[in-house]
Image 1 (cartoon, rainbow, N blue to C red):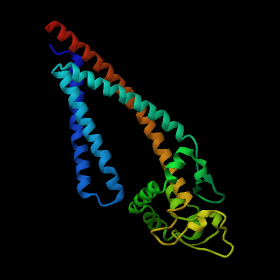
Image 2 (image 1 turned 90 degrees about the vertical axis):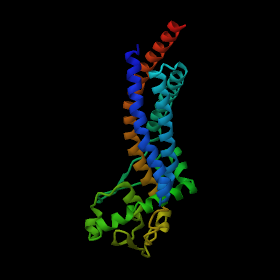
Image 3 (image 1 turned 45 degrees about the vertical axis):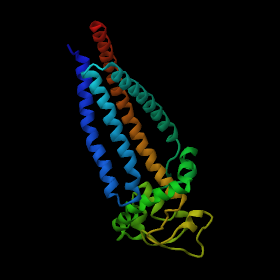
Image 4 (image 1 turned 180 degrees about the vertical axis):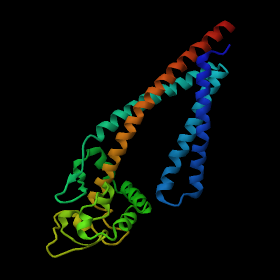
Length: 267
């Protein structure tokens, strides 16, 4: 007689197997239709996740329902490693995103961001030129600053300074306030003789829509601020997932024990 724990593990893994099919299909679709660097970057991770879920779910499904003990043991081993990795990543995410925040600018509705305020580990990632080139390509193809330009195009300088800009808009789509450039429109600014050029971002600014401040330190800082916010959310979700995985792992251990008992009775 198949035990209750085996049924639960079998059902959960059957649902996981069904979930892996569209994930794997999405990865294959990206390999054929990817048109940007961002899309191409997603291909392999999406396919890898799809294959991983499919293989692990099949091992759990067959191991639990067909009472194949070695497959269930392999499934539990993978689950244990997944719990450890997820726990480590959650702690890591909290540690590396602990530092850094936007700086309030006087008489402005937005904040500005400094790369040096963030953790050294994150700074090293974005300061790698190859990595940043891929990220910059994603920002450009994502039309972050094009949407910014269209949204605030009709703003006067006074209205623009009161806008609540996102971290990426503030860091990548406009020059830093300390540059003292003259506002023409959100993505067009005039450099003046008394412009402050002590900040390297002031020299890096270009009115070319394909350049703007994408090579600025402030743009990297804006990205890290976004990443910090997203990782905090992911870490909270990971805690919920960890609790779920521990429960599934416990049920899996019961199913493994059932399999062994059945094997002992058989022999």
